[in-house]
Length: 192
Image (cartoon, rainbow, N blue to C red):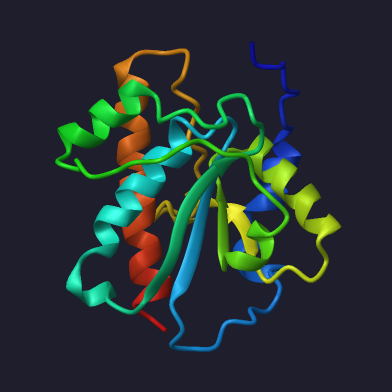
């Protein structure tokens, strides 16, 4: 059973809204080097795996050759370590013709903060956990942020956990992750 997490206040959400460009550390990656991304949710079987599967599929396009490095996903908790993605995640990916995705759930590690340029949280609870972990790793090169900062609107979005719901939650997560990934690729990767 998942632990009960405290709700994040509106003021916390407001603080996060302008973080993308204001308080991010400088990157150690040189211009022209491939961008590496890590997607993070709670258990690493629904949202983060969906985002990773979508991003991997998009990264195969010729315009991204040599621009994308490591792509991975993980969870802030180890509830499902070693498990494959939720069957509904896989069914949703396959319904959008993403058939070659494979993953075993894992928990985030300290080395992830050195390995990845961008670490994307799916919701505010994940973001809070990641920011705490990053503070413990002061030399980290990673930009830790909500994936929903790339919503394409002026308001960041969270990707709600579809685990306890129906297929509509997985469909919404797919739509959001697809949109965020395309926006990130256009805004960051293509502009380097």
